[in-house]
Length: 248
Image (cartoon, rainbow, N blue to C red; front, side, top):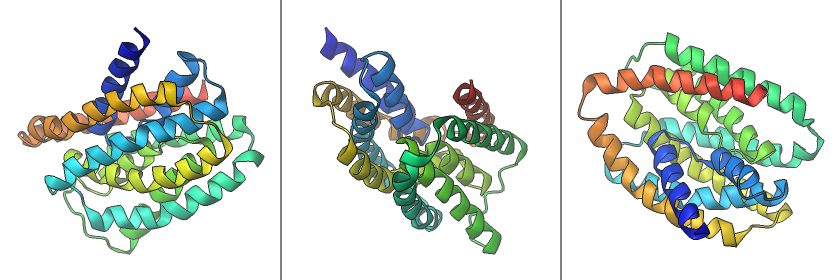
Protein backbone atom coordinates (compact mmCIF):
# COMPACT_ATOMS: atom_id res chain seq x y z
CA UNK A 1 0.00 0.00 0.00
CA UNK A 2 2.89 2.34 0.77
CA UNK A 3 4.35 1.93 -2.72
CA UNK A 4 1.00 2.87 -4.27
CA UNK A 5 0.91 6.01 -2.14
CA UNK A 6 4.48 6.88 -3.11
CA UNK A 7 3.76 6.40 -6.83
CA UNK A 8 0.57 8.46 -6.67
CA UNK A 9 2.17 11.32 -4.72
CA UNK A 10 5.17 11.29 -7.05
CA UNK A 11 2.96 11.36 -10.15
CA UNK A 12 0.92 14.32 -8.91
CA UNK A 13 3.97 16.28 -7.77
CA UNK A 14 5.94 15.47 -10.94
CA UNK A 15 3.08 16.62 -13.16
CA UNK A 16 2.32 19.80 -11.20
CA UNK A 17 5.89 21.03 -10.76
CA UNK A 18 6.86 20.26 -14.36
CA UNK A 19 3.76 22.13 -15.54
CA UNK A 20 4.67 25.13 -13.38
CA UNK A 21 8.41 25.18 -14.09
CA UNK A 22 9.51 24.14 -10.61
CA UNK A 23 11.92 21.49 -9.49
CA UNK A 24 9.61 20.14 -6.80
CA UNK A 25 12.33 19.73 -4.17
CA UNK A 26 10.44 21.95 -1.72
CA UNK A 27 7.25 19.89 -2.14
CA UNK A 28 9.13 16.61 -1.81
CA UNK A 29 10.87 18.02 1.25
CA UNK A 30 7.50 18.73 2.89
CA UNK A 31 6.14 15.27 2.00
CA UNK A 32 9.24 13.46 3.22
CA UNK A 33 9.32 15.26 6.58
CA UNK A 34 5.58 15.57 7.31
CA UNK A 35 4.26 12.29 5.84
CA UNK A 36 7.21 9.89 5.96
CA UNK A 37 8.97 11.48 8.98
CA UNK A 38 12.48 11.54 7.53
CA UNK A 39 15.20 13.40 9.40
CA UNK A 40 15.96 16.86 7.92
CA UNK A 41 19.36 15.90 6.44
CA UNK A 42 17.99 12.73 4.85
CA UNK A 43 14.86 14.54 3.62
CA UNK A 44 16.90 17.31 1.98
CA UNK A 45 19.20 14.89 0.17
CA UNK A 46 16.32 12.60 -0.86
CA UNK A 47 14.18 15.49 -2.13
CA UNK A 48 16.86 16.77 -4.50
CA UNK A 49 17.75 13.31 -5.80
CA UNK A 50 14.06 12.47 -6.24
CA UNK A 51 13.29 15.68 -8.14
CA UNK A 52 16.22 15.44 -10.57
CA UNK A 53 15.18 12.60 -12.96
CA UNK A 54 11.66 13.96 -13.52
CA UNK A 55 13.09 17.44 -14.00
CA UNK A 56 15.46 16.17 -16.71
CA UNK A 57 12.64 14.26 -18.42
CA UNK A 58 10.34 17.28 -18.37
CA UNK A 59 13.08 19.49 -19.80
CA UNK A 60 13.69 17.01 -22.64
CA UNK A 61 9.99 17.17 -23.47
CA UNK A 62 10.11 20.97 -23.65
CA UNK A 63 13.34 20.80 -25.68
CA UNK A 64 11.65 18.63 -28.31
CA UNK A 65 8.96 21.29 -28.57
CA UNK A 66 11.67 23.98 -28.96
CA UNK A 67 10.11 25.87 -26.07
CA UNK A 68 13.34 26.58 -24.13
CA UNK A 69 14.89 30.05 -24.40
CA UNK A 70 18.56 29.11 -24.05
CA UNK A 71 19.80 32.71 -24.15
CA UNK A 72 17.91 33.71 -21.00
CA UNK A 73 18.31 30.27 -19.43
CA UNK A 74 22.09 30.21 -19.81
CA UNK A 75 22.35 33.75 -18.44
CA UNK A 76 20.50 32.65 -15.29
CA UNK A 77 22.41 29.38 -15.04
CA UNK A 78 25.82 31.08 -15.22
CA UNK A 79 24.84 33.28 -12.28
CA UNK A 80 23.04 30.53 -10.34
CA UNK A 81 25.65 27.76 -10.24
CA UNK A 82 28.28 29.68 -8.23
CA UNK A 83 25.48 30.82 -5.90
CA UNK A 84 24.51 27.17 -5.29
CA UNK A 85 28.09 26.37 -4.29
CA UNK A 86 28.41 29.45 -2.06
CA UNK A 87 25.02 28.81 -0.47
CA UNK A 88 25.91 25.19 0.24
CA UNK A 89 29.13 26.24 1.98
CA UNK A 90 27.41 28.99 3.98
CA UNK A 91 24.28 27.03 4.93
CA UNK A 92 25.61 25.73 8.28
CA UNK A 93 26.21 29.32 9.45
CA UNK A 94 22.92 31.01 8.40
CA UNK A 95 20.16 31.11 11.07
CA UNK A 96 17.08 29.35 9.73
CA UNK A 97 14.74 32.05 11.07
CA UNK A 98 16.50 34.82 9.12
CA UNK A 99 16.62 32.77 5.92
CA UNK A 100 12.92 31.90 6.21
CA UNK A 101 11.85 35.53 6.49
CA UNK A 102 14.07 36.67 3.62
CA UNK A 103 12.82 33.95 1.26
CA UNK A 104 9.19 34.52 2.25
CA UNK A 105 9.34 38.28 1.64
CA UNK A 106 11.10 37.80 -1.71
CA UNK A 107 8.48 35.32 -2.91
CA UNK A 108 5.67 37.73 -2.00
CA UNK A 109 7.38 40.60 -3.83
CA UNK A 110 7.97 38.44 -6.90
CA UNK A 111 4.33 37.39 -6.95
CA UNK A 112 3.18 41.01 -6.76
CA UNK A 113 5.62 41.94 -9.55
CA UNK A 114 4.26 39.23 -11.84
CA UNK A 115 0.68 40.39 -11.31
CA UNK A 116 1.65 44.02 -11.95
CA UNK A 117 3.80 43.53 -15.06
CA UNK A 118 2.32 43.04 -18.49
CA UNK A 119 3.81 40.48 -20.83
CA UNK A 120 5.80 42.27 -23.52
CA UNK A 121 6.83 39.25 -25.55
CA UNK A 122 10.35 40.68 -25.88
CA UNK A 123 13.23 38.37 -24.99
CA UNK A 124 16.13 40.58 -26.07
CA UNK A 125 18.85 40.64 -23.42
CA UNK A 126 19.68 44.31 -23.04
CA UNK A 127 22.03 45.40 -20.24
CA UNK A 128 19.24 45.74 -17.66
CA UNK A 129 17.77 42.43 -18.84
CA UNK A 130 21.07 40.64 -18.24
CA UNK A 131 21.31 42.16 -14.77
CA UNK A 132 17.77 41.06 -13.91
CA UNK A 133 18.34 37.56 -15.26
CA UNK A 134 21.57 37.23 -13.26
CA UNK A 135 19.89 38.54 -10.10
CA UNK A 136 17.08 35.99 -10.30
CA UNK A 137 19.64 33.26 -10.99
CA UNK A 138 21.71 34.20 -7.93
CA UNK A 139 18.64 34.29 -5.68
CA UNK A 140 17.46 30.90 -6.91
CA UNK A 141 20.94 29.41 -6.57
CA UNK A 142 21.16 30.55 -2.96
CA UNK A 143 17.78 28.92 -2.23
CA UNK A 144 19.07 25.61 -3.61
CA UNK A 145 22.43 25.84 -1.87
CA UNK A 146 21.29 27.06 1.54
CA UNK A 147 18.13 25.02 2.11
CA UNK A 148 18.01 22.33 -0.56
CA UNK A 149 14.94 23.94 -2.17
CA UNK A 150 14.38 23.75 -5.92
CA UNK A 151 14.58 27.53 -6.41
CA UNK A 152 11.95 27.40 -9.15
CA UNK A 153 9.91 30.34 -7.85
CA UNK A 154 12.43 33.14 -8.51
CA UNK A 155 13.51 31.63 -11.85
CA UNK A 156 9.97 31.35 -13.21
CA UNK A 157 9.02 34.75 -11.83
CA UNK A 158 12.09 36.33 -13.40
CA UNK A 159 11.40 34.78 -16.81
CA UNK A 160 7.80 36.02 -16.76
CA UNK A 161 8.89 39.49 -15.70
CA UNK A 162 11.51 39.50 -18.49
CA UNK A 163 8.76 38.91 -21.05
CA UNK A 164 8.47 35.18 -21.77
CA UNK A 165 5.04 33.64 -22.21
CA UNK A 166 3.96 30.96 -19.75
CA UNK A 167 5.00 27.90 -21.80
CA UNK A 168 8.46 29.28 -22.65
CA UNK A 169 8.97 30.46 -19.06
CA UNK A 170 8.07 27.03 -17.66
CA UNK A 171 10.29 25.26 -20.21
CA UNK A 172 13.28 27.56 -19.62
CA UNK A 173 12.84 27.36 -15.85
CA UNK A 174 12.95 23.55 -16.03
CA UNK A 175 16.17 23.73 -18.03
CA UNK A 176 17.84 26.08 -15.53
CA UNK A 177 16.74 23.97 -12.58
CA UNK A 178 18.35 20.83 -14.02
CA UNK A 179 21.81 22.36 -13.68
CA UNK A 180 21.16 23.82 -10.24
CA UNK A 181 19.60 20.63 -8.87
CA UNK A 182 22.56 18.53 -10.02
CA UNK A 183 25.01 20.77 -8.16
CA UNK A 184 22.73 21.02 -5.11
CA UNK A 185 22.24 17.26 -4.99
CA UNK A 186 26.00 16.67 -5.06
CA UNK A 187 26.58 18.94 -2.06
CA UNK A 188 23.58 17.85 0.01
CA UNK A 189 23.94 14.11 -0.60
CA UNK A 190 27.51 14.40 0.69
CA UNK A 191 26.16 15.53 4.07
CA UNK A 192 22.89 13.61 4.21
CA UNK A 193 21.79 10.06 3.61
CA UNK A 194 19.38 9.38 0.73
CA UNK A 195 16.44 7.19 1.73
CA UNK A 196 16.12 5.12 -1.45
CA UNK A 197 13.21 3.08 -0.09
CA UNK A 198 10.99 6.17 -0.11
CA UNK A 199 12.83 8.08 -2.84
CA UNK A 200 12.55 5.45 -5.59
CA UNK A 201 8.76 5.21 -5.34
CA UNK A 202 8.37 8.97 -5.52
CA UNK A 203 10.89 9.14 -8.35
CA UNK A 204 9.09 6.61 -10.56
CA UNK A 205 5.73 8.33 -10.06
CA UNK A 206 7.29 11.73 -10.72
CA UNK A 207 8.84 10.49 -13.98
CA UNK A 208 5.40 9.49 -15.25
CA UNK A 209 3.94 12.88 -14.29
CA UNK A 210 6.88 14.75 -15.84
CA UNK A 211 6.52 12.83 -19.12
CA UNK A 212 2.90 13.93 -19.45
CA UNK A 213 3.23 17.57 -18.34
CA UNK A 214 5.00 19.19 -21.37
CA UNK A 215 2.38 17.92 -23.80
CA UNK A 216 -0.52 18.97 -21.57
CA UNK A 217 1.03 22.43 -21.19
CA UNK A 218 1.58 22.85 -24.93
CA UNK A 219 -2.05 22.03 -25.66
CA UNK A 220 -3.63 23.91 -22.76
CA UNK A 221 -1.56 27.11 -22.96
CA UNK A 222 -0.08 26.92 -26.46
CA UNK A 223 -3.48 26.50 -28.04
CA UNK A 224 -4.86 29.74 -26.65
CA UNK A 225 -3.32 33.18 -26.72
CA UNK A 226 -5.29 34.20 -23.62
CA UNK A 227 -4.49 31.11 -21.54
CA UNK A 228 -0.96 32.23 -20.74
CA UNK A 229 -2.23 35.61 -19.61
CA UNK A 230 -4.72 33.91 -17.30
CA UNK A 231 -2.04 31.68 -15.80
CA UNK A 232 0.33 34.55 -14.97
CA UNK A 233 -1.85 36.02 -12.19
CA UNK A 234 -2.44 32.49 -10.87
CA UNK A 235 1.33 32.01 -10.65
CA UNK A 236 1.61 35.41 -8.94
CA UNK A 237 -0.99 34.42 -6.34
CA UNK A 238 0.72 31.06 -5.76
CA UNK A 239 4.06 32.78 -5.15
CA UNK A 240 2.44 35.18 -2.67
CA UNK A 241 0.81 32.27 -0.82
CA UNK A 242 4.12 30.36 -0.82
CA UNK A 243 5.85 33.40 0.66
CA UNK A 244 3.25 33.79 3.41
CA UNK A 245 3.37 30.07 4.20
CA UNK A 246 7.17 30.21 4.35
CA UNK A 247 7.06 33.01 6.92
CA UNK A 248 4.25 31.64 9.04
